[in-house]
Length: 253
Image (cartoon, rainbow, N blue to C red; front, side, top):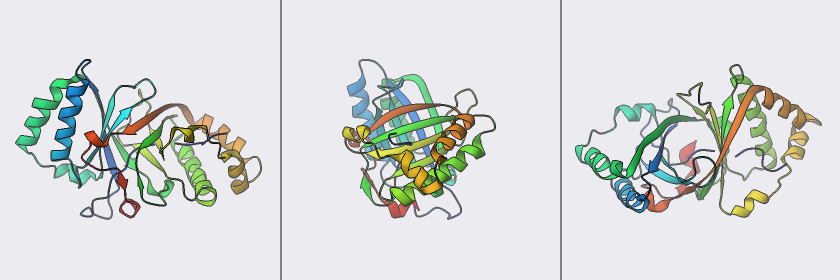
C-alpha cells in the first residue's frame, strides 16, 4: 500500500489575526483562453507580485498537471481568516488591473472555494519549500462527516508515531455543495516525482499503532463514510505567485 493520504495549500499565518479564528484558504480555479496562456501568465504574475505579496492577502498559484482539470490553474490566497475578507481593501487600481488585464485572458468558467485548515489533524514538522502537491478531494456521504474525521484522527496518530518528518494538511470545504462533493481535502507535499513510487508500508504501520487488523477495518469504515475521491497533482509556480515557496511551520500553529 502506497501513501494512504495526500492536499491544499500553504502560506504564512498573519500575526494580526485573533487567536480564536481558524485559518482558511480562498481557492479560485481559473482557465486561460486557449491560445492566450503566455499572455495570461504574464499578467497574472505581474498582478500577484504587485498586489498579493506577504500578508493576509498573499497568493500562490499552482498549475494542475493531472486529472480532469489538467491545464487549469489554482489561484490560492491564504492562509487568512474570514475577518480579513471584511477588511480587504477596495483598491480601484487593483480591481482595474484584475478586470482590465487578467480577466480578458480567462474563460468565464471558474470555481471559488473556501477551505478550513485543521491543524490538529495535520502535520508540519519543519519549514520547507513547496514544489508539488498531491491532492485528495473527498466526497463525504450524508452521515459520514464524523466518521471520516475520526479516521483522520487515527491517521494523524500513525503519522506522528511512524512518520514524524512527513508533511501533510487536512482541510474541509466551508461552503461545500452536495452536488459537487468536494467536502474534505488532504494534501501531501513532495519534491521529486519518484516519491510517487515509494511504499511507506502505511498499512503495516497503521496496524502497529492501532492493533492487528485495524487497517482493513479502517478501509471498510472509510468506504462506508465516503463516496469517492478526486486526485490531482499541483505544481507551484513561483513566477506567477506573490508569495515565495517557503512555508514557515511556526506560522501555521
